[in-house]
Length: 536
Image 1 (cartoon, helix red, strand yellow):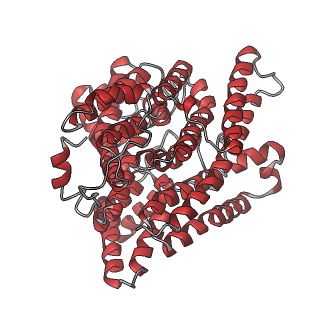
Image 2: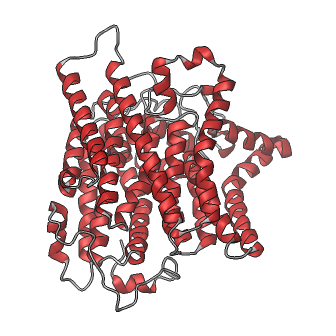
Image 3: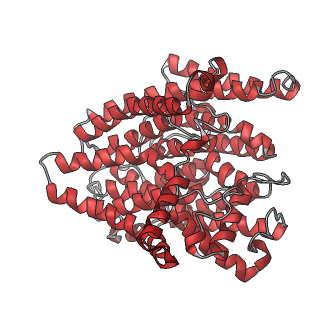
């Protein structure tokens, strides 16, 4: 996090055009008389001239949470022959560090072939190169498949923590710093908001329990959001392309980002040079990502045809339309409908793709129109959230882990919105998102980590004291908590019958989908509200 307050004011890269409140403007806490365990602890640092120590303590506590979750099992542990996501990530280290670059996207596609964009491949190459220096057996080509040694697990867990500390954590700090200043909140709130975001259980459980590197993509996207909001548009565009270059799921954010940038190129007057400037930034970043593969294909003896083959293979692997509408049960529209109407029997794969596309566009285009016509800074993040939820709920090939994408912009709102109603709904949807991950985490032996992480976050934030003041909203929140708690109790006391082995999984997904739909509608209302706000 930022070293001190003076550093923040002189950081030309991230705060060049940040709106800083005048000295006469009061700085406030969102809920001054609040006494949550987190705020009571951080209040110790309130009298300090800067919040540097508080922020470092928050980071250390966040790392401890991650280390605790990392002590448990991971995806595919002891489950041959394919093992799981842990083995997929390790295998990519093996491919990237043991083969020429031109073979990375072609090698043995039946066994965890590389299917993420080029920046993930480069990241795997770096980690694989380091692994070879420590212990070549971890990434020995072909012979290392399925390795599950404790030392390898420690190394892989450490790479996630370091990746998060280098990218995601500073990105959270940069965004919170902007948001707190823009909303004229106190410096102490910067520390409490950063803690609420960094300690959120969903990302910790997926990246440090299940095992993935979502923190890198989310961090790059977050740097992009912060730069865009700070009017550093060229660098923000490059960061967003890098996020897309790490995981294609960053496309969930693409439409609102494009809409906002287009809007500020049109209003208050048309600015063609700015539009060209941003287009050049995007093209430069894209070219930089694919250039090594284009050259490798050319020099590998294929010439122009080899270059085109490389680029085609990357696109084919990154967008796997042949896999079908979904692979596993997830809390979105299609899996929920399929419980009652067997979609794959009524429609062809091509028809399901079209249906998914049209449905997603129907829910995303209002966001596009709103941000093009009203490119407000506060509306931007609500637009990003609404778009990501629409993609998660209606798009093609969604995984349960993809809930992290809509959850990020939602959780970030804790840093700049003082409305108790808004905060209470954000805490609620965070909990529902974690509930929706229960079938995955239970299957992978992360039951203890799930319950402890969920309990600690809710205790630190005292979410039981933050219920919506509006009665219908309060009934939805309390009712959903009761239903999910009851579902856990019933599942523990009475396992699913053999004739319906997925009973509880389907119940979990259906209930979560209903909650997500309610939140999406509420999200649209917040977007409309901020678009109507006359402030920039």
